[in-house]
Image (cartoon, rainbow, N blue to C red; front, side):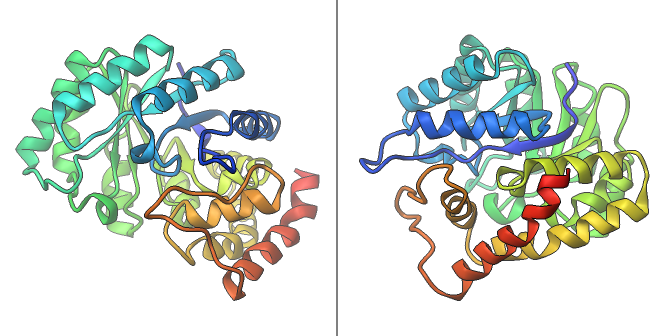
Length: 297
């Protein structure tokens, strides 16, 4: 299993009644595969995972596994605040057919580094799936330090890390952890090109929901070491990435998907839709400006 390159953290479309819109989800998956996306994440933070009940998680993941049909890896977001719940969700994902689990650092409870280490070892031992660590301190209130990651990468079922800290020092420290059986994946669209030029194997991306073909081009250029092409593509994507920072994820990306006809902008409370105004107008304008580049990709 090769988990690398352009990986999309899929949004979860909801219909007018608030339930799953699997028809729109299918069109989103088809768009990703046609655009060259090399793996998909289902029920991650972009997919509003914590607003899905177990039945919805099962339906969403089962649908994705069948729709993708083995063409690219399907990664399930299974992280919970507690270890036992995380193991149970990971086992559910394995039974449904996921290829790997994306497991976020336990949120809100703020464990120590030793607690983080033991948590991930337990999930790797008992969850039944290859585990990708997911570090996103602004959301979890907890940071898995590179020294802890260095210990965890020795477990045969821990295959990589999605690192969403975008500062240069962390990029460099995480890049040093890379080896044949442990990959570094960027989790920050704004610095993804720098991470890949520094040695990251790919990016789990939000913006790829909207422009999968352009983001695949960026990943290919950066992973090949073509710094000039990479900087050019990153510059073209920067306005859209900035526009997506106008509100917490996935509020803006859902507004963008609605503008593209890929489902409604509906979210589940406490998240609310992006209001009509300058931010929404800017998002639509940046999407329209990227259309020629997407057509040429």
